[in-house]
Image (cartoon, rainbow, N blue to C red; front, side):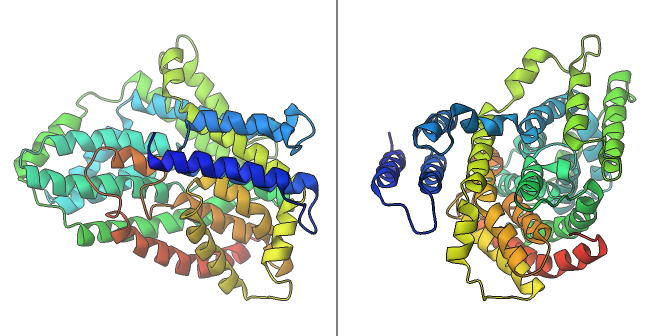
Length: 464
């Protein structure tokens, strides 16, 4: 067991002991004090990965009723009945269906035909394809799909120096493009739906699919070229022989016409997108229901799109356990009045800021907290309640700060600590400190743009 894990276990145990022995802080109940302690306990285990992530989640669930965070065990597993859990499960199925067809290869090949043979335009084509794919499925499966395609190209390069140079830029660019694309729609990332659910829970405010799209998609259109520019300027990928690019294009080329299976997947995805958009006006249509039914259609016998056994193997169960536990803790933080207590003690009641400054402040706080709480779902859980209360105290829509929270948590690429970046980091093409050389500028730009874009679009979209 390494030092980090030892520190994690010791720190988590110390938190439990302090939680049990310390007096109840002024303004809190016993349940509220214990909720804070168990939440910190869970976050320490996640950040340090002291024990397997699923085990950390199960242990936390077991401690919730013991520490009176909820009256009974039902409260500890309340989060596992949240619609976000089923959305995450369904997204892995949709990703599997897409991987079983050459859809992404067709898009990438079409872009590469216009790339002009330069590595910079190849990288841009890869980033655009990644971002577009991330519009429809969650970040982790998107990154996994595009990483495997990129590795085919990287592994075809014989020169070791060029291979390392190109590998670094591509392996950093793919998770960055995935996370940028992940803010486009509510269905682009489970973090978006988690934030929307917590906004409704904390403030009773609803954001529609179209409202989110109107805010998110323009940001993606702006930030993908900007991120690409940073990648080629900071990492300067080596040029390759045009023959190598043609060889790679031959590998990903799909010679056959669109078959029945591929056409079926495309049709279902188009129908899902239409229904997602219609959910903004038709109350009977929900994003979660549409996504789940779409996944089930791919799994039906006779359709031959996605095998059940393969679907089970593709699900990242760590994410399911972490998300369910996080949602249970989020409910406890609200139910035990911890969120209001945090705002009253940490944010001066008489501190009134302009809307633009407040939105920028929320973005800065989120990015700083991501360095401490590296689990984006956990961070959204912790900050959603306080952000909603701060917005209310300043007379603006809670949706402004919750959207900022989701966008910034989704773009947590300063260091490769999130699961998405860890997929490419594990391939060994870049070091822990390489990513921040480019992404720090992305995050600064996002803070500045959000400070003006969110209030502007919030007024146009009538966010309340």
